[in-house]
Image (cartoon, rainbow, N blue to C red):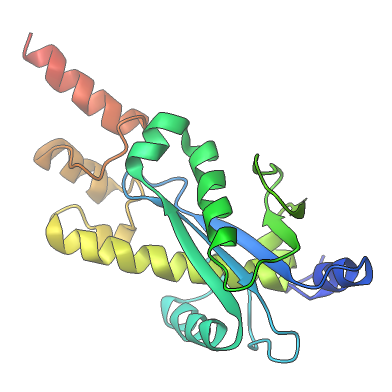
Length: 211
């Protein structure tokens, strides 16, 4: 098994005639609050930052440093799907919406996308392929995972300042014990996903207690 992502998927796509190949990944499906965030990255094969890997395998400091290098050397875009869109569409479809928005946000339109996961987003207007565990296998997707993670973490730090007590600056909105305790003690904020069970249960319990 490969220990680090490589450029083989991009090279294979180039051999099939594609010129601008974008890696796409998302972060934030599991949290109880905040948007789901996607990034699209078209790497410059002559200037690929060293050490790209699945964002989950990197320290925050390393992710931040690599994100700056990626932004400086590649065509990158970040996009979100809101809490309202998550609750309306469901988290999978909202993730795919964020992916399509990220692809549309690139400075130069790609002609092929390498999508992390096993589900192809509906409505793509370009050629694409899914790569399971793509963030650990494909350099462009690894780069996208880093860009998306850094962007969403920064957004959650900002939201944590507006809604202190939930620990979002540390837990990024994931259902950690401190976040769940704050949810019970402080209540549901406008940034919580009401379709997610822990949030829904608290809202439903509050309604039950008042009737």
